[in-house]
Amino acid sequence: MVTRLYDLQPTREKMICWILLLINLTSCVCGTFVVNVTQTSYQAEENNNITLEWTFTTNTHSSLNFLFIYSELITDHKVSVLYNLRDGVEVSESQDDQFKGRVQCDKDVLREGRIRLHVSRLRTEDSGRYRCKVKTTYGDNVGECRLIVTAAADEPKPQRPESPQPESPQPESPQPESRGMIGLYVVLGLTAALLAVCVVFCSASCHCMTKSADKK
Image (cartoon, rainbow, N blue to C red; front, side):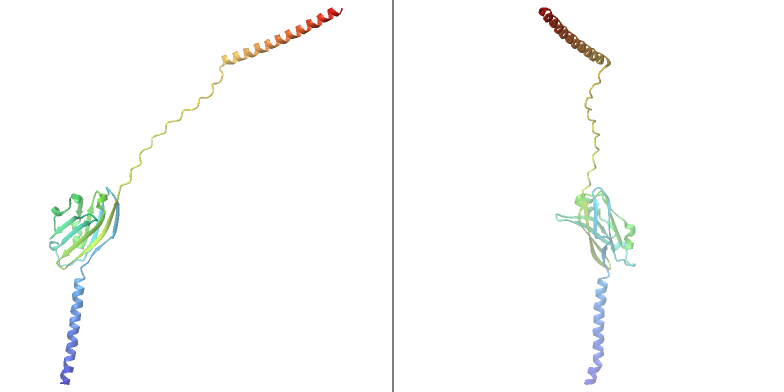
C-alpha cells in the first residue's frame, strides 16, 4: 500500500505542473494582443490637419478581411464615430456628420499593425478623448489618446499710418517793405524828439534873454 502511494506521487506532481503550465500559456496568449498609441496627447490649432496613430499586434497568418477597427471621439456631451472599418471595408454610413469628408485612413500600413487616421480642417469641438478598438481573429484590445484643438489666433490688423500732425505756424519774417517802414518810423520818431528838444531849448533861451533885458 505504501509502495502504491509513492508510485502515484510523481504522477500528481506532473499533473499539477501541466495544469499550471496550461494556465500560464492561456494567460500569455490572451495578453499578446495589444493596442498602443504612438502619442498619448496631441495639440493643434483649428483649421490645421493632424494624424492620429495607433499600433496593434500583427499576425502573419491573419488577413485584413477579418480586421475590425472602430474609432470614436468621447467628450462630456456626446460620443461621435470617427472611423469604422469592418472586415477590411470602410463603413462610412456609421461615421458621424462632424467628421464627414474630413477623415482618411492609410490602408497600406494596416498590414504592418499601424492605424493612421488623418483628420483635416480641425475644429475646436474635435477636442476630446479618441478611443480606437481593434478586433482580429487572434485577439482584440483598445487604445486611447487625447486631442486638444485651440482656437486660431486672430490675424493682426494692418495699422493705419498716422496722419502727420500739423506744424505750428512759424512767425513770419518781416518783409523788406515792412523793414523799410519800421526804419522810417524810427527816423521820424528821432526827428520829432530832436525837434521837441530844440523847441524846449529855444524857449529856455528866449526866457533867459527876456529876464536879462528886464534887469537892464
